[in-house]
Image 1 (cartoon, rainbow, N blue to C red):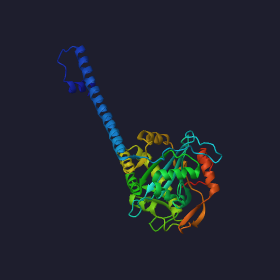
Image 2 (image 1 turned 45 degrees about the vertical axis):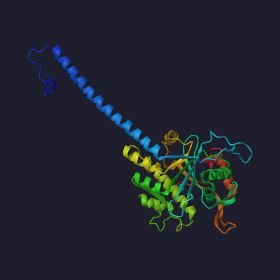
Image 3 (image 1 turned 90 degrees about the vertical axis):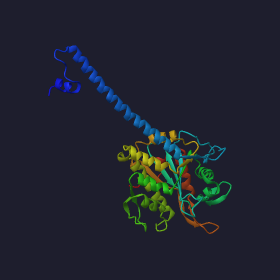
Image 4 (image 1 turned 120 degrees about the vertical axis):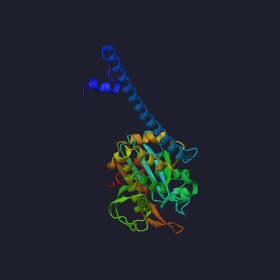
Length: 344
C-alpha cells in the first residue's frame, strides 16, 4: 500500500478535489499527534523511573539507623614517631561489624573486619580481626578484642583499634548474620570458594550457596582447622562473593534485583552519624570498576595461641607485624603490605 493510502486509513481519505495544502496540514497534524503520544510515553517511563528511585531511596533511608558509633572528643591519632596521623588523604577506614543474633550471643560481635579503601579507590583491602585477639583496651587493661565491644560497644572498640594500629577509623557499620542470609537470597545465591570443607556440607573449592547455606558457612568454626581464624577467612571469602554478585551485570541492570538487594542490605544496617545515604552512594560509585582480583584480604597478625590469666583461649598479637600493618594503613600503602591473600 502507498504512503498516501496508509495516511488515508489513519486520517480518512481526502475529499475529491481537496487542496494539496490542506492535505499537508493534515499530515503535519498527524505527525504532531504521534510525537505527542511518544513524548507522553517517554514522560511516563521517566516518571516511573523517578518514582522507583524515589521509593528505593525512601525505603533505604527508612531502613538504615544512625547511631553514635564513634568516640566523643576524639584526640588526634599519633603515630609511633609522635607525629599526628592526618585525617584525610590516606584513604578511608571502615570498621564493619557483624553480630550473631542467636540466643545467648547478645552483646557480642562475631565479625570484626577493617575495610581500607585507598585514596585512589583502586582496591578494597579487608583485614579480619579474630575476636580472641589479646589486646589493650582503653580503661580496661588486657582482654580479648571482642570484650571491647561488650564493655563499651562500638565507641570503645573503635578506640581500641585506633590505639592498636595507630590509625583513624572514619566510619562504622554494623549488621547481623541474618542480613547475610537475606542479601544472599536477594541476589539469587552466591558462588563462594572454600579453602577447606566442613561438617556444614561445604566442600573444598567452589560452592553454590543460597541464603540458609551462606548463613551456616559464615557461622561454622568448630570443625575448621584453625577455628575462629579459619572462620574469618570464610567470612572474607563470602563478603567478596556477595559483593561481586551484587555488582554483576545480571543484578546491577535489573531494577527489581537492585531494590531487593538494597532492601535486604539495609534492613538491619546501623551506621555512624557521619555515614549518610549520599556518602554511601558516593563510595559505591567510586568502587564501580573494582573486580575480583582487586579485593585482597589479610588476617590481623598474631604469633600463636595462648591462655589468658583467667584461663581463656587467646590469640597472641604479633607486635612487630601489627606495627607494620598499622604503618601500611596509616600511610595508604597497603598495596606494599606483604601478608595478604586473594581468594579465587
